[in-house]
Image (cartoon, rainbow, N blue to C red; front, side):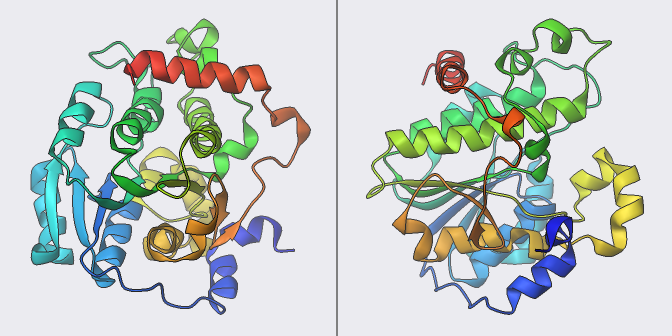
Length: 296
């Protein structure tokens, strides 16, 4: 009924009236990537408030230590990892604890121009899709919950695997669009959430994706300044945007199913118009491409 207003601070305030505090996490481990600002920092602080020990996965250790000092140095540790680097992801997985309650894939990029990693992958695809795919695979037997932080931008995009690989138009630096690439990776995250749910035993690991709404984060400020300028009075703060991340990592209800897409603690459709629906062959190809690229 709220339509697009449901993504704003108004939508969150209206829905939050029925929210109850998530249960305590009693020293269980939460791993949050991209934890130095915005949604990642807010989610980490939320887990600490519930009694979890949070591992802040960051590229910049100095920034990570500042966040650690702010949210609770005795309840958090810093782990350096560039999620776009598959070598870094493998090293991180080897160093993480044997039992993890929740793994939050929050790190993301929206580069203005075509950029490739040292391993040859387009940067948006490597950071938003390949790194999380590999880390999920490596930790599947050790993690109870996986949360993929997606975006409402994915509603505008049909899955395009060639574009993820930066082939064709997307492989031409002159025609590359960071916003299109970002939306495509966010669509891929949601599809992979559903595919992981089909492959993993839900009694051991559940996988969910979520949409934070329109949150006023440093990523939004840097990537979509025009949108922020117009919508700023209606944007959520990072804490409201991260609320569903924390709830998915702590509450009992998300353990009863797997593979859903959430906004404000409620499951949402993954498509609103038929022309964004991917075929079964596109879904299978996405999985094969990710498995091959990561060696998972």
